Image (cartoon, rainbow, N blue to C red; front, side, top):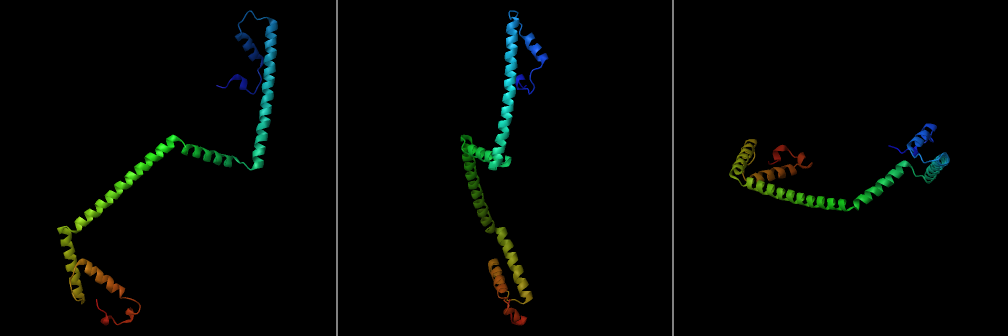
Length: 186
């Protein structure tokens, strides 16, 4: 609740009566009461004057800022930057930053370990009997296809077949494409 003295309106007669009623001192003379009321009126006048001075100063303040090119947005940016800097230099921020850094390092180490484990498991899988069986089936299928298409059917490992296919496709340069298809070897 806003204190009464901050109201923009001076005290009214009803308020003065209220103040008189609140002061229950029967020992107060009429002269003392008049003196207090005069002092009260003087204070109210001073408060009004101070409000006018403050309003004038605020207007002057705004004009000077405008002349300097300080806009509310630039002021907000400055305050935000200052606040961000103050926050970064705080003990709590530094501790949180260190904790997050440590957590990041641990997470990175965990992913590295996970990657190594996956690589090892894939290597183990490649050396497993089921993968070898699959590889042999693919090699046999490729050999059969090469034989049926007219190739040599040399067999070899899966890597050899892929290598020969890559070698054959690299031979298809623009000058080799001019050769008759019967001259090409698979």
